[in-house]
Every structure is written in C-alpha cells, then in structure tokens.
Length: 240
Image (cartoon, rainbow, N blue to C red; front, side):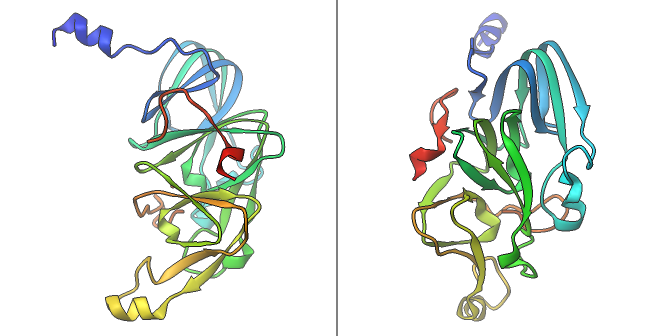
C-alpha cells in the first residue's frame, strides 16, 4: 500500500451522530457542547475542544476508586469538533438510554456519556466484604448515549444467571447481584479462583453483560468490563 492510499483508507469516516464507532476500538464523538469522558482516553480531536479534569467534589465522589477499587477519574470535554476516544485497545460499545433506562457499569469500563445522562455511585451492599472488589458501581440513567468498553465481543445473558465477577461488565438496574462461593470448585482446582467466587443475579427479566476476559483493576482489585457496525447504537430496552 503506497502512502497516499494508506492516508485515504485510514482516514476518519464522515460521522454525524453524537456517538459513533470510528472502529471497533475507537469512539468518535461529534461534539457540540459538553460530554463526560474517562480521563486519559482522548487520542485526538479536531476543532476547538477544551478539557477539564473533574475533582471528587464535582463528581459526587467518583474518586472513591482509591478506596473501593471501582470508579474512574473523569474529565469534561467542551467545545465543537470531533473527539476521538479509546481505552487500552478495548472494544467500544455504544448504548442509547431512554428516560426510564438505567444500567449499572463497573467504573473502569465507563468510557463516555452525554451530559443528559444522570449518574451516581452506589454501594453494592449485597456483596460488601466479598472478594470481588466491586463494592461500588456507576449507575447511569437516561436519556442519552453512553459508551462502555469490553475486552472482546460481549455476551448479554438473561437473568437469573451466575457470573465470574472479573468478567462482569454491567447489568440492568432492575437486578442486583449477591456473592456466592462454590467451595467444590475451589477444592477441585486446588486454589482460589474466579470460578470459586461468583455473582448471582437471581432477579427475573434483567440482563448481565460479560466479556471473554477476566479483568483486573489498575489498582490491583478485581474489576467487573465487537458489536455491530461502527456508529450503530443499541437501545437498552433491546436487551430485555
């Protein structure tokens, strides 16, 4: 491939939606105003865009991650142009939340969200004191688009279901996990493992998003994170 052909074939698509996938691993945000994004995820931008790192007070304690192993440091991107985001080569998944849609996501897997999306950090009291490290999750409520990341192509499982906490990315807010241990699996393997500790989602009519990868948080704790063609959003209600 000669130089001119390389430049043409790898140039950005003409995206017009607010959130679109430039590729399976890159998010293209057509920015006209402000969005929230994971700090450090910007790989490039065009136009006039400024960035503001948010403090813990401004984000209701998003910086609790030093205590909980969950959450992430966020930044506000404001202005006009195209903003390109990525996170460690992980796959980008775009979800469109309606006003009554709410999803719980491991903080490490939140890439970006429109400012119309309400969010909060909630303690998972049902698994407090467990070895999952997932004591706090980010709850996101529509309307608006959010982008999350997964290692590889995700699988959406209907509840009731049990999952490995290190492979669990997100779940619908109408279900809540509890901690379960399978001592038989631990004895069979001969050591502690993700399979011996599980998350049980016993509720009906919900979903859990898992990935084909057991992710470890940057702080050393356990974490919970290819879909359709670039730019195609998915309604959360499609999972139900």
